[in-house]
Length: 499
Image (cartoon, helix red, strand yellow):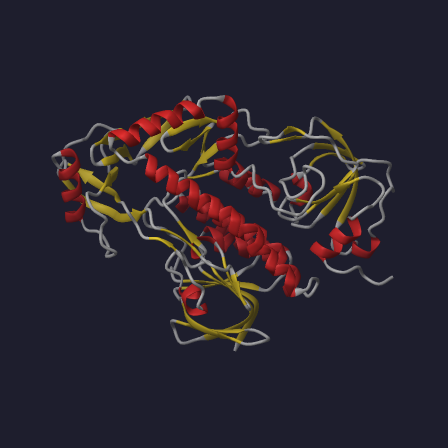
């Protein structure tokens, strides 16, 4: 039987990101993916938020995405556009880029890291014991792994086979998405009426002087709200025609669909992100309405939180209990996404009372402090893991400061390219000794250039030293008294090596 340290079911953005994180830590990881290639039908997600771009920057691959995407310095909440240009980050924007391109670029990175991908197959079941997991594939082959991670979407077989509950709320609304040819061109843009929200946009366009210019002819992208929640079966051209006639009075002579899909506001979250040696990430762990474009972001960030922890356990550097922090940290983050998407869906209902509420919310979000708070939340920049009392930085993302080091000027994120923890010492050189963890963590003496600023909180006092986890979050911040540093190193990166 073929064996791997970690097997990932599903090769979408979450699965690819997790594979890359594990491969950087030299873990034997493989992906099982039902598609025979990375080609993706349909538009799916349409961009990357600030924190996700930061994560890619931490791994040194952000420019691969930036070179193909379009920058917009706004995010949306329930139809209200929020300016994010003043957020304290190098990436104060949303990067417009369709998921098929995001996956292609991630797959190229993963290929460079020599990750094995079993294509054209999917997991059909598994059994786990005290030492590993046996996974059955659709072609009859079996694989064994120390750990199995389900990144296989909202209908996750891994979650169901593990017996993990998926509580939440059934859908109240559904919409059709499609790419079709039209005999008659509709008015492009986003429209509202008594049925809800619908939109039309040309698929083929060019960016000229920073503006989108649509090309003549070619297919049209359509989104239309259905009168009633649609069935779980695959939607048809007739379904789309009927929905358009109900909303617009005509179907514009739609024909020759490239693809048609349906999305709803079904909202559910796994009761636990781990059961024994089986873990969940991405849509397998949480599903919600697509409002705000937060699904892909949450999944990729799940992967980066889980990756280094699972690597340390798989490499026997840390005890298995480290995996419990994955659920503890990421479950509340996704729960908040579920909450804000449910609120956004409620606010886009077409009745007059909801419109009044939506207008009131829009006024509030036009004020500076609420705007900053919601912009940071939607961008993923305000995430705070509860690591106890201490410096304001503790449990928050480390700002990408400009540093002066013995090796010249560097950015903080540059130090995270190898996905290894970093202790930055801003005091006297040689003031810290972490030799018992030298095989795991980097110690960098540096001077800081610039202000320490966090989203929403603003400027924060600079610590004498800061310990940064591989995912870019601060595990410890303090002074040269060392108070709590050894405990933090042990808790996150394993016990000290004997002298």
